[in-house]
Each structure stands twice: as structure tokens, then as C-alpha cells.
Image (cartoon, rainbow, N blue to C red):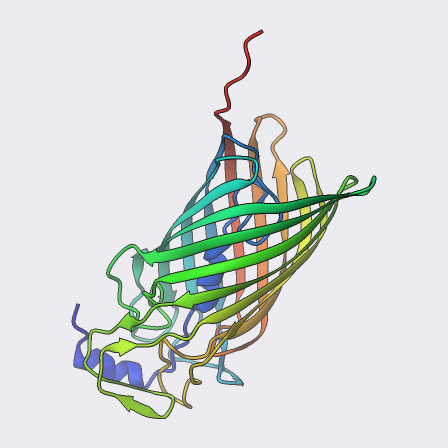
Length: 321
């Protein structure tokens, strides 16, 4: 879809900030007491599936290191509905997938919100080690190899209302987890994300002090770090978590100018996760997640709520009596 010159002129006068935070949250949609960044595994031949609803909003953002508001945007709101699935090939190998549908809107200004499918995510999670710690519990070492691809031909050039960056990704993650017999839960992990070039629907662009006569944009790769601590027992979980993203390159949003998809997007956020099995419906679990971005660079100072239900099917054949 060609971007109209009139629209581009309007966008240049309105600072826009990439909603990288929403995409990071989407990649971490929970899958039956496990995500791609924790140390919990689904037991073999079980399939866990469900739907999650996300709400992300911000009216302050960081333009480089400057925290500011923008009356031409007001509050930027991102709503997400995600279908998730997790199948356990074995007790050591789980396959996780997510399909998100996203709506974006701004409460002020002339920019129109976007809606549609974003990026399909798939990951393979492998339990490499499980070490018993006497009578206290067990330490697990988990490796994850995952990636994502855009599901539609959405434009990445309408930030902050674009559905995403339209970049293919490949990521590797390593997690160390301790789960105590009385419910103590400790978790720490790190990941590296490779991002492919993005093709724009124009023949040139300006970023980081340079003019590029090309429609190909090199996307900087990213580091992710997570830690969590709390309680988990019998599928009931209450944990606090901290996560951070560091982009390995890219420039800042220029003062009173548009951002660009390859900008350096860094953030630190903290929140909590609550899971609870419904007492009258076996294998149905409720989830509630909250995150607050309290520090960042070229990103919205957002609050994010995610809630949903997961149901687990057991396909393992039971032995006949």
C-alpha cells in the first residue's frame, strides 16, 4: 500500500514512538504455567490452549532520553487478542505458538488506528538439566529456540499505530529456574534476538543522521533479560518479575521528528503474574499479568494488563486395567 505524501507530511510533524513494549509482551504470552522465559515444562502428550486479552496504554514516552507528552497523540492504546497453544512432545521438549490480533488507536490527533494480525511466533523449549537439591526442590536449566514471521502485509511505517516492525526474528534463550517443594519459585534468563531487514514502501529514508537511498532497513539486534521470584504450587502462582530490553544499535528519535523502525528501543519494566486453577472446572486456569514500564529510551511509558484462560488436554493413552 502506497503511503500518501499528504499523510507523510502530517506524520513528520508528529513525534511517533514504536510500541516495542507491546510486542515484547505478546511474545511472552503464558502457556499453562509456562512461558518461553520461565523454567516450567508441560508433561508429555498434553496440549494447553487458550485466549488472552491485552490492554496497553501510555500518554508519556521517551524521545531519546527526554520524557514527554504529545497533544497530537493524547493516549496511545493497543488492544491485543492472542490465541496460544503449547504441545509437549516429551517431558523435555515443548512446542509453543502464538497468533496475535492487534488494534491500535490514539485519543487525539489525525492518525488513524490500525488493526489486523501481527506476527506468528513459534518456539521449541528444551529442558537440558534438572538437578535435585536434597529435600528442598530442583534446579532446571532450560534452552529455547524461537522465531516470528509477519502474518500480513501491514505497514511498519505508521508508528506508533503500526501493528509491528514487520521484521522476521530468530531468538535463543537460556533460563535457570528453581522450584521448591513448598512453593518457592526463582527464575532468571537471558535471550538474544536476531532481526531481519525490513522493506519499506519508499525508495529512501533518513535516520541516525544519515540519508539512505534504499528501501531496505537494517534492524539492530536485541538482548533481553528477565528475573522473577515468588510462589508456585499446584498451578497457583503469584510472582513478581523484572525484565529489560537492550537494542544493540540504532539512533534516537530526533527532537520534534518522527521515529524510525530501527530506532534504539530500550526499556525496563516490572510487574506481577497471578495464575489460579478454577475449582469447579478441571484443567482450566485463569491468568492475570501486569507490567509497568518505568524507564526507557524511544518507547512509551506504558501500563500493560493481560488476562485470559487456558485449558489443558491430555492425549496420553491410559493403560487398560
